[in-house]
Length: 99
Image (cartoon, rainbow, N blue to C red):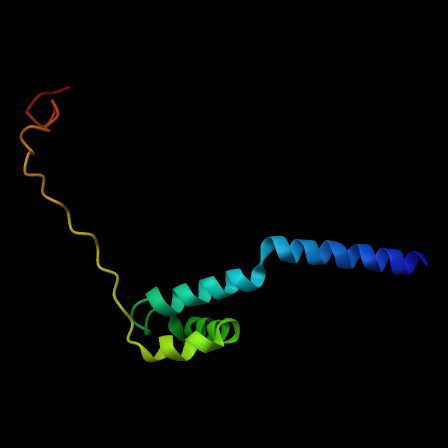
């Protein structure tokens, strides 16, 4: 009888932890990010690529074929925005002061 209670408590605790941590969803999100935003497939080595593709294929089989067919997109760095009122918004140090 004690074995059944201990087994039930362990199973309940494991189920609760898996529900809170959501490892399947986290693995899927990581794999999707690696596949979509890593850039060139040569980066990271063949082992990392194989793990990312396998994890993505297991966690999201419907979208993995579509994503793998699409070319990798480079994430461009944000371009600095030029302020037309730069002279008005200068600080004291920008104006040649020492403070």
